[in-house]
Length: 188
Image (cartoon, rainbow, N blue to C red; front, side):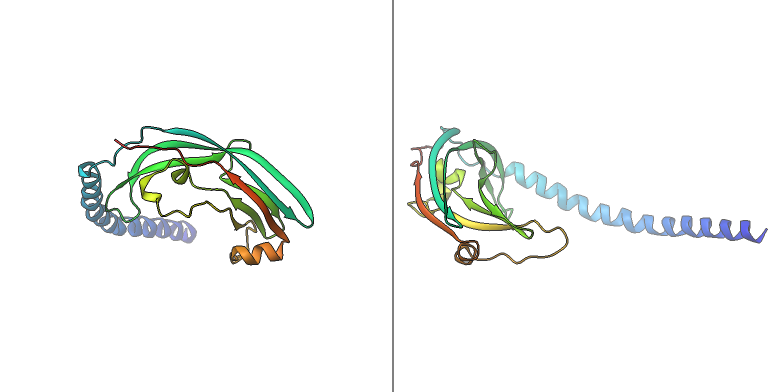
């Protein structure tokens, strides 16, 4: 009998704990809904940026690099596609979105090497750069490839290294870099 009473009291206690939290949860939802609704309404009221006339482009490139004394040549095509409009990161306006990837791999960058901690890639440009989006006119020209790393170790935080340090640590040298010029795009 005591065991049943104990189980009953535990169940009643849990139900009571849930019931007590319901007003708190409802209150949080009621507070958040107006803010969410305000932001959704604000997004629809903001003017859209002009859309690009050219929404798709293919840009051949050649990257020649040396890793551990071996020369590797990558000839591929960087694909750029217009991907619509989204809110800016500061939520103060709207901006054009672009997708960019390498045709042969579907990746955003050229894979160079990896070890047990990190994968090393070479970034070959932004879709915004190649599609001549006005918000990226400050992009370095001529475009230079950038080396970066990604942590692939699931349980350990690995700090990211500057490109120069990665190149030295993994014995990587960029020998040559040929890329296509951006399109002459207009926005309406």
